[in-house]
Length: 115
Image 1 (cartoon, one colour):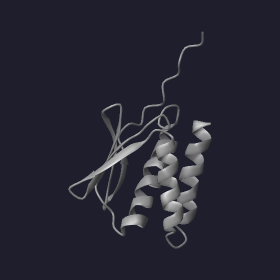
Image 2 (cartoon, rainbow, N blue to C red):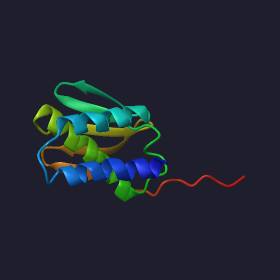
Image 3 (cartoon, helix red, strand yellow):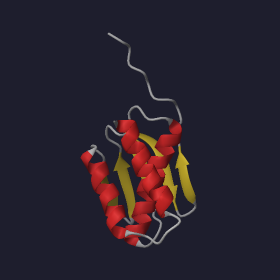
Image 4 (cartoon, rainbow, N blue to C red):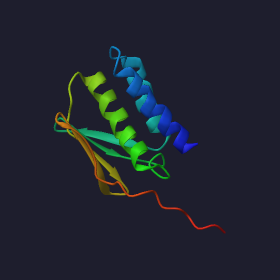
């Protein structure tokens, strides 16, 4: 389920990039992320985002897609690229800025042992 949601969010903005910015879609992506336990705050013109459960169980490529989806949505809603710090459990896992998006946590997700 989480992986499917990741693909859907990433695909939404990948497809949207070729078209005009849709603020309703961008707001819907942020609302969907909130429903998945993601929280963010704004301070001094930048954004700090703490990934919730959507981050768990996703591959590096999907994680980068999530960063892009949020950053592109933020650009759409604010009209400019901002500094965004992405965290998971207090650890910095990615950054977005006017210069680009960088995934810092490229390790594969942990697998939980079978019972």
